[in-house]
Amino acid sequence: MAIIMRIDVLLAERKMRAKVLAEELGLTEAQLSKIRNGHMKGIKFDTLDKLCALLDCEPGDILKRE
Image 1 (tube, rainbow, N blue to C red):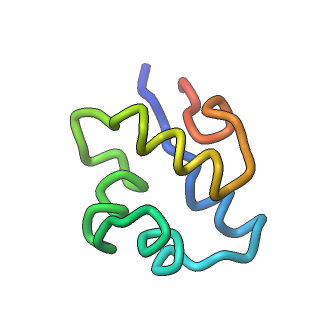
Image 2: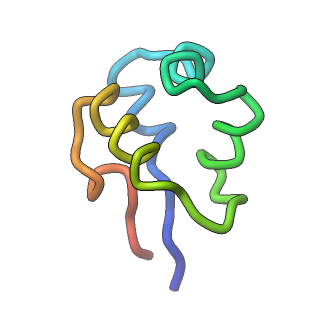
């Protein structure tokens, strides 16, 4: 089983670019890319909270257990 990040799906639904999201989060595009692709060991709760606020969603909308 794995945890899947659904940020790309949410970005597409909201017609938002990853570059804009990265700027709003205060991250580089490379850092956001690692989060989007699941190539990180963890994510800080404050970053997850900001993601939810910017994408107008809940943590369960971003994270999926597969």
